Length: 478
Image (cartoon, rainbow, N blue to C red):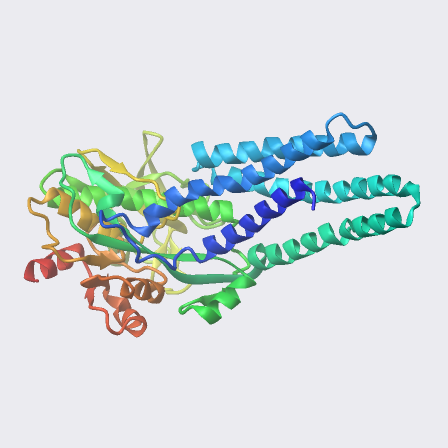
C-alpha cells in the first residue's frame, strides 16, 4: 500500500471514530477529577488531540508530493495539485483545532471538503502504480511476469474502491438525517465552575444538566438498543434550519444568564433586580387590527391611559375593561418617539369572549447587574435556557457568606423567570437519568414534571419546586 494511502486511511478511520465519539459523548459524564473538573470540561482539552486527523491528511499529501516530485505528465501534475490542496486543508484544519477551536463549523467544512480529494488521490495513485508495473513488466521473463502479476493484484482498484464504499456507507449511517429528531441523555455542568460573579466566593456543587436533541441518524437506532432513554419524534415540516436553531438556543442561553444574574444579585442585596418597562411587540399578525398600525419593536406602556408594564398587566386590563369589537387607545414608544394610536379589537379565535389586537408580545425588562460575571465556554454546552434556575442558585451561593448549599451536592433543572418562578423544560426523563448516574444529594425539578422525573430515576431524591425561593427554603431546612 502506498504511504500516502496509509495516512489517508488512518485519518478517515479517526474521522469515523470522532463522529461516533461525538454522538456518544455523554457516556463518561459522571467522570470528574479530584479537583472538581467535570467531563464536559475535559472534552475541550481532549478536542486538541483531534488535530491528528487533519495532520494525517497533510502528512499523506506531503509524502505523496515528495515521492512524485519532478515526474512529468498531465496525470502526475493533477495528482500533485490535489496533494498540495490536501496539505493546505490539513494544516489549516489542524490550525483551527489548536488555535481557534470555537470555529467548529468552519473546521467541519474543511474536513468534509478534504475527504473527496483523498479518494481521488488514492484512485489516481493506483492508476499510476499500475502504469509503472506495466512498464516494468516488459522484460517478459517468467519471474518478471510472476512479480508483475503479484504487483498488479496488490494494486488493483478494488482496494481504494473498497475503502471508498465502506467509508461512504459508514458516513451515511453516522451523519445522514432520517427525518426524525432524537433526544437522549446529556452531561452535568457545575454552574459554579461555569460562571463566576466578581467578588463572589467559589461556591459549592450546583449542577445543571444537559440533554442532546438533534436530527436523528441511522446509527441512533443502534444506540437506542444499547442505551436507555433515546426518544425519537418525527421532524416537523416547519422545523427551522440548524443554523437558525443554533442562533436561537445561543440567544436563549444568553438571556437566561442575564435574568439569573440580575435576580440573584437582587436576592443577595447587590442590585435592583429586574423591573418591567412595558410590553414589547414581537410580531404583528397579517390582516389583524394591529396590522399597519403597530410594528415589531414597539413598546406599549398605556392602554386607555391605564399604565401597563408587563404582559400580565396588559392581559388583566384587556380582560377586565375591554370587550371584543371595542376600540382601545394605545400609548407606545417607537424609536424613542412617543405615539398614540387607536386600535379596534376582535375576538380571539380560540376564546370568542377575549379581545385581541393580533400581536405577539413579551415583557420588556431592565436587568440591573452591577457586578461583572465571567463565563467559561464549553463546546458541549451550546445553549438553551434550562440551566437558568440552577445558575441563579449558583450566583446566590457565590454571593452569600458561607454559601447556601451546606455541603450538599445539588442538581436541578428549570428555566428562571423574571419573578423568580421556575419554568418547564424538555427532556426531563433524560435529565433525571443523567443525574441518577452521579452522586447528587438532591435533584430540583419544576413541580409539574415531578412524576415524569421519578419514572426515569425512582431512586433519586427528587424535590419539586415552583420558585427559586422554594429551593432556598429547602436547602435552609436540610
